[in-house]
Image 1: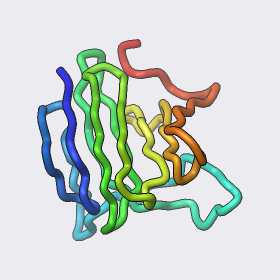
Image 2 (image 1 turned 135 degrees about the vertical axis):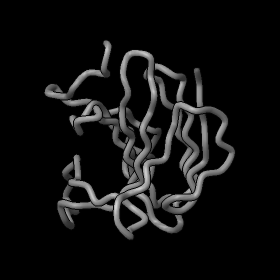
Image 3 (image 1 turned 180 degrees about the vertical axis):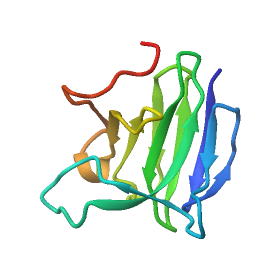
Image 4 (image 1 turned 90 degrees about the horizontal axis):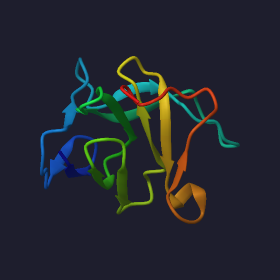
Length: 134
């Protein structure tokens, strides 16, 4: 099944159309998950970032999506139910999103125009994990 939603800020969900994308609230009092950065760049400001986390239900096995988010974040996320994603960042403060296994192994990331300088870019690495069940 397909699913789509709009993330506003760090935890507000609008126009949610399915059940595959599930917002995962962090434990404790924080509104965001603090995770180790999965990318490196010339502006390396720190190794940890604040993200909004979603569990994604798939027939072949679940995955996790991490969205570096802020109070001004606006991001449309669409998922086909397997492994195809469509993103539409409405604010430039969302640089990328990462897709991970439930054990936090990196699968792929999508880099947005604010970083890539052009279109949304899908990035994988040679040592990346595969989607479960693939």
